Image 1 (tube, rainbow, N blue to C red):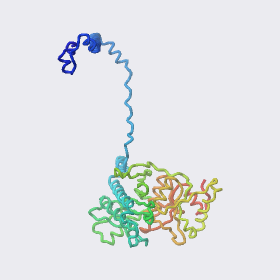
Image 2: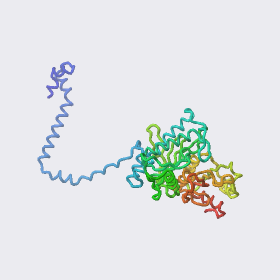
Image 3: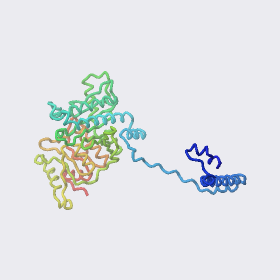
Image 4: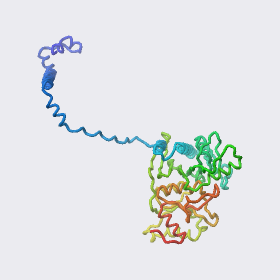
Length: 420
């Protein structure tokens, strides 16, 4: 072996000159020592193999148990999207695939609207559309476009039977080709008066099951169909299967509940998905922020004035009064209240006895979200979710937020002792 490695032919092939025997010995010394060690090890192994195997068996028996496999750690790059979250709920039988399809179609609509809002200033989408909605409010261009986007996405889901929008006079039965079962109510663009100033706006929605007594048949005449549509839509908030909103601000955030807590998803434009960012949101029991339009102060009842005045006295609240924060967008003000605690309110006044917010597609969905997060929604005298709408665009006063804050407001309005 040494001779072969030291041969002139071998050395010439490797680009080296012929070596002397002494040089060869020096060159081969490490290799020879390794070969000798290998031979001794092989001989010992052969002897051990020929010997009785009792010691080997004893060693095997005495060997310690293997260490348990390490638990797989969650990857830092593992994200839960809205889609996978809905699939998990399907597996747990919390929702069915029909409802998941409706929620997914709403998420698609919100992605489109969020993109339109972000580009409104450079796409000539600001300003008025030159017409009024059923409430007599001037419609913005984005009001009209957002309403169309919502309607198209819900129709394409194939799971929606009736839709009702703030921008439509009456509920609409989805065409038979696309018809499904669920009833969806929505405000496609809440706070649209803020669009031109670049202030946060949002979309609000709620999903109901159809009323069994109001099943729409193909043979129904238009008048009968419309009557059934209205009856399908006018359900109390405690019948909601799902409620949610999307905030279009520094980020696009979708917040929703299916009756199993409240979850928030932030839109990632790089992958085009809503990512779970706020799991199991809980509203604080108390807060130090109130959101009211105090420009209407002189139109309020004396009880309402007394409530607001009480929040401004430092000595009543440990030396620091409540802070006032009011954006003018229900979604924006409510989202802050949900995360930080406090109370949002739009009371009735001498000009608008029932306030300005609509029960069906604003107050009820927000109240469901608040209650699922541990908060409350009230008119000041009654739980919002217990009210059965008498009309599609019915208005009610709304006070929603931390449970203690809503209880305190009710105590002042009703002349009762303050909560502990």
